Image 1 (tube, rainbow, N blue to C red):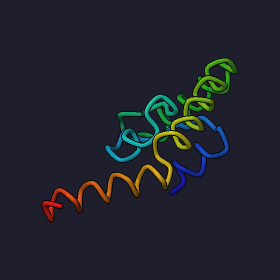
Image 2 (cartoon, rainbow, N blue to C red; image 1 turned 180 degrees about the vertical axis):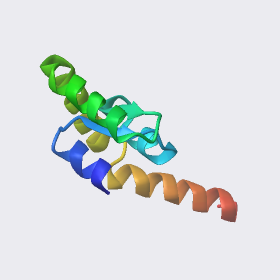
Image 3 (cartoon, rainbow, N blue to C red; image 1 turned 60 degrees about the vertical axis):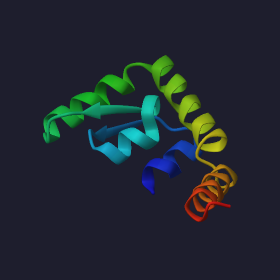
Image 4 (cartoon, rainbow, N blue to C red; image 1 turned 120 degrees about the horizontal axis):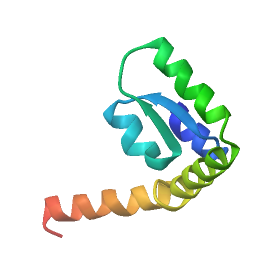
Length: 88
């Protein structure tokens, strides 16, 4: 939920590189491959030093959430899946 909440507020993110985080945030996130607090802190520091990148990432995340991951789109996808399952 945090990933989507940050996206709703247009905030860039630093995440450990897990499938769900990457699938949701995409270009709104910086991904740390190692399970290392030091590498995580470095990624945060690098992002803090790049305001233009933060702005681009935040805008991408907000747009993605409201245009691609919104409830209305989810409903259409679910209805389509049920239609295919029931051969409607």
